[in-house]
Length: 340
Image 1 (tube, rainbow, N blue to C red):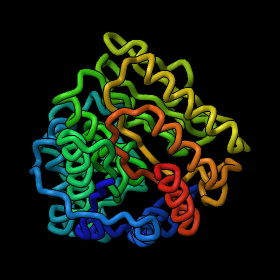
Image 2: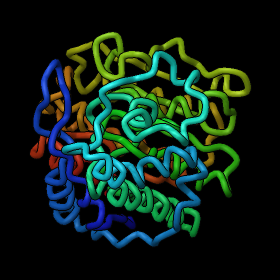
Image 3: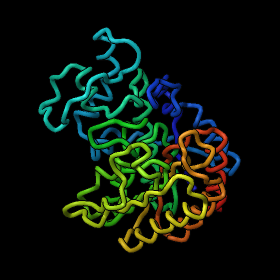
């Protein structure tokens, strides 16, 4: 299996995130990569440097004004005399009512283009997010070139990023970028997301489209971030009606419950007629993860990998969340074992 990762992704080094009323050390940090790399090495999987496909694959998914904001915000922030990382302290009552965003000062743009206080933009954020997206593009290109399976070690992650908004540690939606790349050849692509959090950004990007299925199982959003999307009755709209599928799970869900939900996602992908898959693979459903409400073990990921193999479809695996260093190493290792 080909795998892609660039050390330039480490340039994104957030110092803090906001959780339950206080700033804490960032859960999404560069140390996560060392754990993922150890698992890959133990499994005999070597990563390659992704090619630079430029901004075009990112702009195929994201609004150009938003991409420019992520690129320039840090420098503009410093010029304005602000301190620390770019973090909004005011949000518009309605993003849709803002109108032309290009002339706004950086602090006002931050409130429009950033959805929360846990995706701070620092000096290296754009570079890190850019190369995370390039890893996803290279993995998709490997599949387009004939590989059955390719892995993008994406960090920072992406599935909370909307077309024009950062959120939940995410800046560019790597799974959506990979799916859009695959659509250049495959008429129908399914994104199967088993990260513990609902991929609200991915859902929003494809919600009115019939050519990309977004299928996710996750913690019940009534109790868990991102709170405002991921309910079972969200099935798509317009042309996309029926091309969105959510299975929220209650706190305490175990391996059998989790694996059965993922199996249902693959079944829906089959019914949808998917010709290729993008797997949004988060390891934060693991019971040891500091954010997880579940009782799931690494063995579940081995079973999920076997389910994925059984689909016999060209597949891009995109790394998403997972914040307990030992758990993400064990979970990825178990998953890779299931692919053997």
